[in-house]
Each structure stands twice: as structure tokens, then as C-alpha cells.
Length: 172
Image (cartoon, rainbow, N blue to C red; front, top):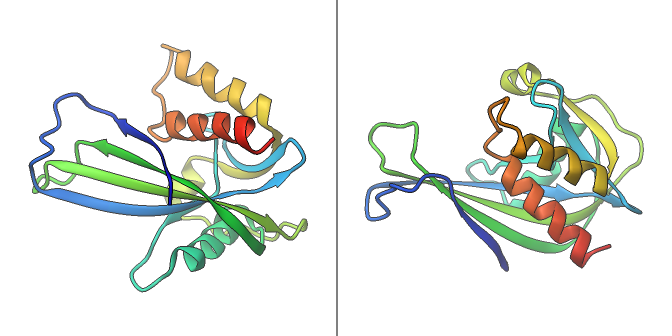
């Protein structure tokens, strides 16, 4: 899959050190200029539905499961790969020196009728809600959060905003 961007969150990462890797998949679900996104009522930002790959799952299986859990939407078709973003940071785990997260983005279609969400507790705490949002509104909203010195920026917001801007350039 095409590498869209590498993001390094901290300057003083020892890239030669012991590394923990995480892989996630994220769905790009378009309807005209609107996208099905996950809105956080706590952070007031938009993110793509998706999440971590579990042991034994394919990326496609993870995508279908995660979109259903986070948004209640049923994937009807995975249309194509869009690309991947690699993020590097310092890990929470003391025994590691590098945290690498690779997010794989897929363009897909969903059934228009949204069912119930099945959220993890942290997702409930963040107030995750599925919403169809105009791409320009999502970009403007997320950029205002990134430009604000008033609050902490969710670590995924720069990644998701970058991908939103690429979608606007390449798919719309």
C-alpha cells in the first residue's frame, strides 16, 4: 500500500531502540462531499471509523468489524486501498523505546441504515458518535482544534486531518 505520510510526534525518539508496533485500519466512506466520520463530543474532533487489527484477522476483516463497532454501519463493499500513514512516538510501555503505528486507509461503501454502536469504554468516555459531515467542515473543525492553544490535541487529529485533505485533493 502506498505510504501517504510519516509523522514523528516527538523529536528525541531513539529509532534504534526496542520497538512496539501497532496496525490499524480506517474506512473512508464517501457520499458526495460528505464522509461518515466519528465525532468525539469530548474532543470536538472528527476521526475515521476504524481501529486495531487483532491477531488472526485480515485488514479487511478488521475494517468490517471496526466500522460496525464504531459507527453501527455495515460495510457492503471495500472499493480500494487509499494508502497508509506511519506514526512514531515514545511508547507508554517502559520496556520499549519506540512506538510505531501504521494506519491503513480503505475506500468503502456501507449500508445507509446505521445500527447500534458497540463501543469500548474509552470510546464511550470520548463520546464517539457517527455523523455524516461535509469534508470541508471536518477539515476546518479539526484544523481549529490543532491551532488552539486552549486544549490538548488528540494524537490522531493531525493524521486524520492530513488524510482528509488528501481525500479532498485526490477523490473529490
